[in-house]
Image (cartoon, rainbow, N blue to C red; front, side, top):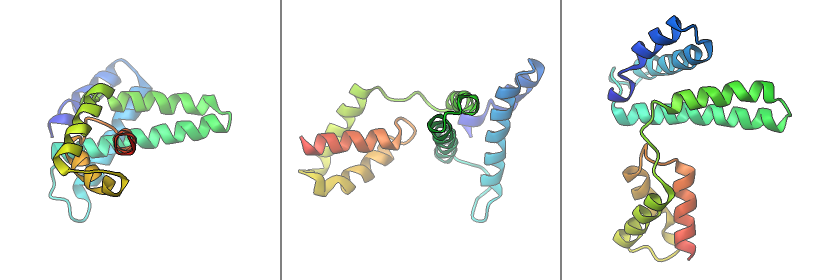
Length: 150
C-alpha cells in the first residue's frame, strides 16, 4: 500500500494545522480504503494498483459532482469538490504528458496490429493495463480513437 503509506501522517498534519478541507478529503480516502479492505472478496490489504483505482474513482466522483454543481450555477458547492479532488490527486502517481501518451498508444497499436476502429477494444484492453494510474481512462480512449481514425 505504498501509494497510501503517508495517509495517516497527512491526516495528523491536517489536524494540527486545522485544515478542515484537507482533513475531510483524507478521511474520505481512509473511509474508502477501509471499505475496500473489508468488502466481501477483499484479501485485507490493497495492492498499489487497487489503491490507485480507488483514488482515481474518488477524484472522478469529486470532479463529476463539481461539474454538476457548475451546471446548476452553484460555484459555492463546486469549489470544495474541486479542492478535494486536487488533494486526493496528490496521492496518485504523476499523470503522463500528452506526447508520452500518444507515443505509448502508437506503440501499442503497432504491437497489436490494429488497423481501424474495429480493433479499438483490443488496443484499449492493452492500453488500460499498461497505463493504469498514469493516465485517465477517458484520455486514453480519446487518444486511441484519434490514432485509429487517422
